Image (cartoon, one colour):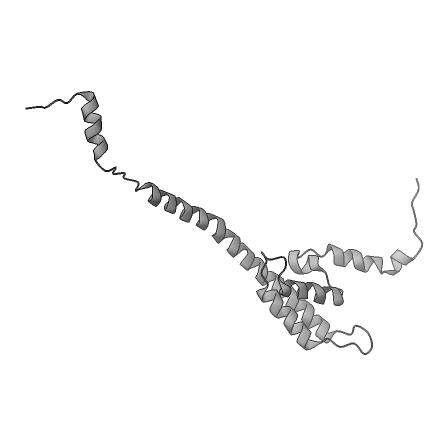
Length: 148
């Protein structure tokens, strides 16, 4: 035996039943979407900067090692405590915080020692090459221009 309800009655009967979704409740779907978005945004950036930081620290260590052993000028010595602090700051500064005091110390050390931020942070030696060329004999000598 089949019981037929009028259309208005069948809608009310269906509306009284709790909603069952195979995808979960709206709150569960929103939480799942937020978790997926957080993973997509945070993980690649963190690993990419971690790899870059290792290379930056290696270049900073190379600079400190060279300044500790090379002859800069007569009587000059590298302040080893400040150099160690510079390296520690390179390892631990917060790249997302422009006001991080460790980054301020990095900038001060690099400026005081005439080093290149391009080289340390981006492995770009162009400022080193151009700076050395500006101090060369060729830059101070007469400029010869070829004419046709």
